[in-house]
Image (cartoon, rainbow, N blue to C red; front, side):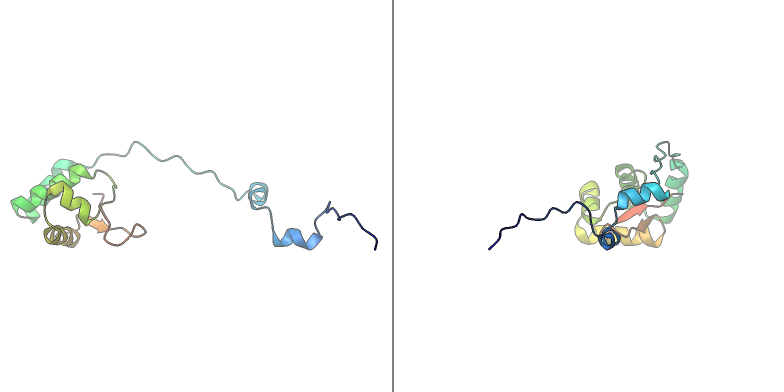
Length: 125
């Protein structure tokens, strides 16, 4: 028997490159690669006094105080759930669920998708 040295592949077969394209190279050359824009850090602050008046008109005083505590604890577009509400306001699970339901009903908060079930954030006014 004759022994042969293992073959070295110096070039890929032509069709193999079509199966495994070099994505980064393709993106850069074609111009479809776009750098992400920097986030706007200087977000305008919502008028908290107007928000307080609307909340105090729509809800009972105790509920309004709970909502204002939550607003301070979760500024901007911070995402929160029932367990976070329970800790901040120091209420039980059923009361936290009722509070969240009322806040959604009155349009104070909105449900957030993509972060799990039962996650909310305050609406921008």
